Length: 592
Image (cartoon, rainbow, N blue to C red; front, side):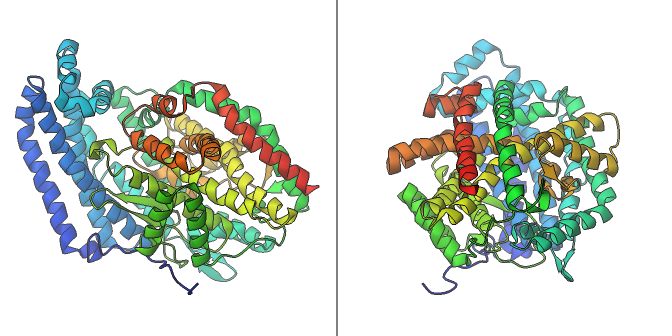
């Protein structure tokens, strides 16, 4: 195989040539603004007659459809520019312009929702019986039901709060602040993303130095980060109060189309299984020569069997095992590698977190990460390709039905990870290599069942305290320490109490609780993985159909339709957990 077969830098030029100074992008933004102006000029007539005939409502929906994908296209482009170069001030300016257009869009959408809520049920039922609106039944009923949480005549106030100079500005400030951090390790400066990659370094002294350097860098700026997270949360709490929302968890559940019963059943089942994973952590600590596992050793590879992959080797391995699942996934991933969809180069100055950005108008995705050559990097690459494959599966779906909840998005990504880690286990040469790989797999279980739980607990308690006033950095550190202690059941030493700083999910402006969906996706993907093991490649079509339905059904109904399972039951979650607990048993047996 030739070296450097696959490019490690993405191609953004085919989307909007010229970066943040792109003439095509400028024209795109002008078209969006013109489209919004036309929609705003016509909204009064449409809103006053929306209940008179199905074609009026259908026309309004199509007007919204014409604009939303364009907003997403430009927003993803700006996010990619900022990730590759956080100092791209032009991209930040573009991001602000897109936010302004989106604010106008959301304002009109909310007015449409409020108007729908006022339509008498008998008239609404008549509208919904029309063939013109049949395709949109789920979405329209969801919009109508959501209107109870909207602000009526105070929509404009919310739009102002969400403007580039308000709520969203703090999210942008976090991106700049975190991307500009320099973590000094071995007399060399690294980005946050590069420093985090050192967690999997084979040398314990390097892992410890990187851990302490990251904590020290965060300590220096913790007051700035505390101010940022407090202002973000303060905005959110004010908006919730205006909307009559009592719990910050409610919008997250609504966004994920999940019931509280499902979340409670999942966390209850997870908590009951934790003793097994505590046993794994304690055994790993013993193997590493300590009584309790240090946080900087959690990602440590066991033994000397870890392989270092070139980017090409990782790509070929992923393609092989995606091909075992089905031809569509393999073909899709090959195209992503060959057509410059992935930014993977290990260099300073990049943003610190991996992500996948969808471009709905061009039917493409872009993947961003820092590839360091180790198994966690290959799994992160597979994870983001899973997100991109979900976007690919949604291409035939109506543009307004492509917006699926995060918990299902994380299903596709973690399913892809499982294909890779189990592929590596299948070809393990001996017990030592299998132990190493089981450790890698179990890290994912612990991350989802313990680490994600600690993030959930921290965020819940932070918002409870923030409602009473500003929460200073020392208190945030204490909240993080307590959440980690509880979630890990006391099995982790020297935890990163400032992980609230370098965890970007707390600073996202769209929705709080960007954590529990990962656990949902992980456990649900294990169930789907079990189905694939039974059916083989014929399952790929069923899998894609499930993904395609993910933007037009409540998750409970989606899972019921495609698997026959009730996810409000603890028994459903226990099925996946039993498979994970078996991994622990295999690990403990091999480690003796």
